[in-house]
Image 1 (cartoon, rainbow, N blue to C red):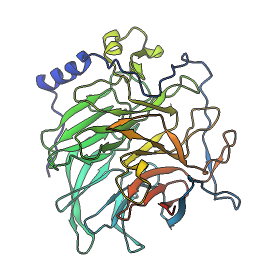
Image 2: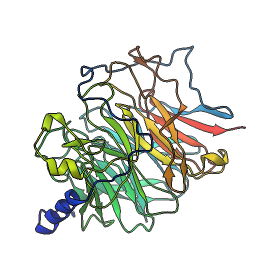
Image 3: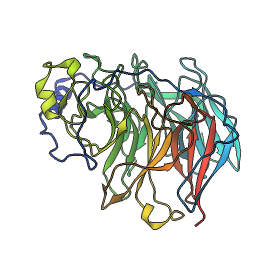
Length: 402
């Protein structure tokens, strides 16, 4: 069994150093309105209570769109989705926390079946040739996939070892490049703002499909979790969950066109070259080299997935625009998120901040109760969009009727 790890060599050290030397982006986020001072409010602990859908509660979408329940009854936490070679849906269920009961489902013709069981909090999925790639907190594995029977074979081959990296932010998103020559893996930080973490943490990694030649692409990314290519291009976009503890309106989660060798701030700076007050004076060079994000998404919204829409079912103005799933806040006195939002793009660039698109799971910003939490986004062959909901343990389908 092959296990490829990041090499702690002079070459890698030079790559990291180069990332800190890149001059910061002088372009402010498209929706920049300034930032409040750190600790402008006390740090809240306001976790949601997930309840059954109330009889008078429903989801709302813009005029002409509809949303319907697509599938329900998943065991624990339906999360990330991809399409297989037969247009089947492959879905991770992360299971109960810290118990190896995670699953991978295949869904075809309205029927779901378990094809991999006993996983540790699986999240990201990818397909390459006849391999199904599955990301767990401490490893990336690949399984032979029988596309005719739609089953995974064997115990899986570990191609990337992240041993000891299963704490803290445990979701690992997987994405191949357009030519399927390189695999990208996100690895979030092990803590909120701690110093001295492993070099693999708070990064996006890049490797060959077999896990070899593993290298760090970009650093200072506290928890990159949505990862997509802009349609028809080599522009890699990521959505990043930012830190807690600085107040209701700090720090913004953000959207960014990830650049090779770039540094995005964590843990020394946030939302551009703004020094983290809890590490004041520790690394001024790192603060200065921090790049601005492209779009601020809102503080504590907990972005979990992004999707560039390329279908033809939705109106033309949505083509190549970006949908984002906001799982919802806990570190804010008034609740935010629990929604799917939309950012329009023109000529490959965002033109505004996020706009509400699908909402209703949150009963009120001052209420603890919510009845769903969106996670994953998947464009279907007919142009409709699926949303996984790990609060309600359901899949929802958005479609356009006009």
